[in-house]
Length: 463
Image (cartoon, rainbow, N blue to C red; front, side, top):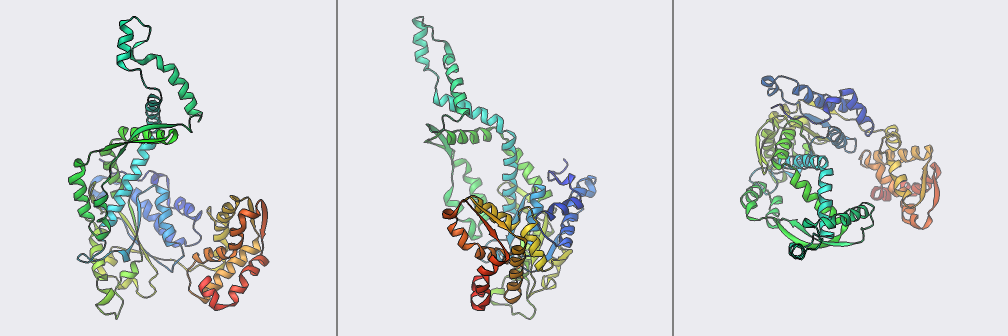
C-alpha cells in the first residue's frame, strides 16, 4: 500500500511554502527555503516507485540562531500548513537511559498520540452530520419516550385506537425537534447515561520515565475496565454534545484510524528538538556534574533520528522517514561539539540572523497575526478602539532594539515586554473608560517608557 502523505503537500511548491511562511514570519529567507525544500522532498519521495522510495531518507535540519528570531515558529507553522503530526520537545528534558527522567523515545510516543488524535478529529468531522442526527434522535426519545409495551398490549385487548410501536409520539417528537433546532429548549435539563472510563493511577507514572510501563499496563488491563455509565442531569445542549460524541465514536473505525495515523506519523511526522546545543559537550568541560548525561542523551537520540522502531500503545512506529528539525543558539557550544554520528544525521545547517530595528517594525505591522493587531483586537472587547500611529510603531521598535543591545538580546520577544509595559495602564482601566478611541503616538510611547529606559536598574528588571 502506498504510504499516506500529509493532505496538502501535493499542492505546495517550495515557493508557495515560503510565501505562506512569509505571512507569519518576518525575514529568515534561508531557513524558510531549507524547510520548504525538505517538505517538498517528502512529497517527491511519495512519487518514487516502491523499491527506491524506502531508501530515500529525509535530510534533517539544524537551525542555528539567537533566541526570539523565529526558529520554533517556522517549524510550528510548517506543520500546521501541511496538517502533519508535529511535536516540539526540549532536548534538556531528556536524560540518558539509567537516569531518572524521560527517555528520548517518548517524543515518538507523543507524536503518535498527536497523530491519532488528528486523524480521529478528521474522522469525527466526516461523520459529524450522521452522528448529530443519531444523537438528536436519542435525545428526542429521552425527552418523549415511547409508550410502555404493557400499555400498548392493554389498549389492543380493549380495542383502543392507540397505534403500535409508539407511532403516536412521532408528531410530538417532530414538534420537539423543531424547538430543539431553534434553541428554545436550551434551558431545559435532561438525565442521560454518559460513558466514562479512566485509569488515573497508571497515568501518574508517565512523567517518571516509565512510559513503556504505562503502555503495557494499559494494554493488560484495558479489557478489565469496561466502560461504565454514570447518570447525569445536564442542560440539553450539553446532552446533545455528549450523545453526539458517543455516536461519532460508534461510527468511526478505531483500527483504521490507528492504521492511518501511524502511516501519517511515519511518512509526514515532524519532530522539533529545541535547545539541542544544551546537550552538546562543551570543549574543555569536565566529565561530571550536570554534564554527566549530555553525551548519553545524544547517543540515545541517534538511533531515533537515524531510524528505529519505537513501541507505542498503538503499535510499533518506525522513525526512518520522520523529519527532525533541531535548533539552538550555540552561543557556548558549537554544532561541531555534537557527537560526529549525530552531526551526520543533520546534514543541513541554516543560520538565522538576529533581528534588526527595521525587522521589529515589520513584525509589529505586517504578519497576519501582527502584534499590534492582537492588542487592537483584545481592547476592542472592552469597546476601546486602539490606533497605532506609524511613529508609535517606529518608537516601540527603536526601544526594543535599544534594550536588546544594552541588556540581553531576546529578539522579537522583547516587543511583547515593551508593548505590555506601554499599555499596562490602559489595559487595567479599559473596562471603565470604554467606549473610547485611544491614539498611540510616538510621544505617547516616549512618555510611558522613557523614565524606565533612563534608569538602567529599572529597565533591567522591567524591560
